[in-house]
Length: 226
Image (cartoon, rainbow, N blue to C red; front, side):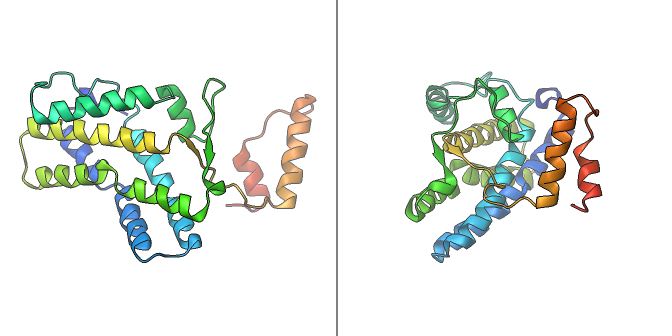
């Protein structure tokens, strides 16, 4: 993907339209509605599955953006002062590196990555609801509304750039809110016996040198798993 800082104005506007249209914002509305109706734990858990995945999807867009979001801003403006406070909070409390966060989005923890202190599946119903309330009220959702209005008004690129920086920092705050929580969407799901047996045999054959590694897609296809 082309680096955000290397995009021309047309490409940058197209990116912003993509970002504000991400599935995360639809999932947030559904999750907020479920919380408002005091829905069941099962319904909240099912929607959190989508919300968590959508947070990770949005994060992929920012992997190539390593700029300081304060760079080039007039630090005396209200926006710059706000972003400075937020960035200081993020950098003080963040425990992971960019590389570790990228691997987390792929479902992998590096050896250097501090494991999250809490498991989402082990939270009590009240603790889970409290986490969801924190997530659906994050700054990113109001930031997205401001960015959308600017896009609709065909605002100058300078205004869009400032709004993007606010949006990016808001995403970092959302990511930080989830950093101490381990969530495996497949946890608790039962693996089909025939798949587990085939997988174990493939691993054993590979470790003893009897076979070369076989792409997982071929194993899935053989077992009729989508």
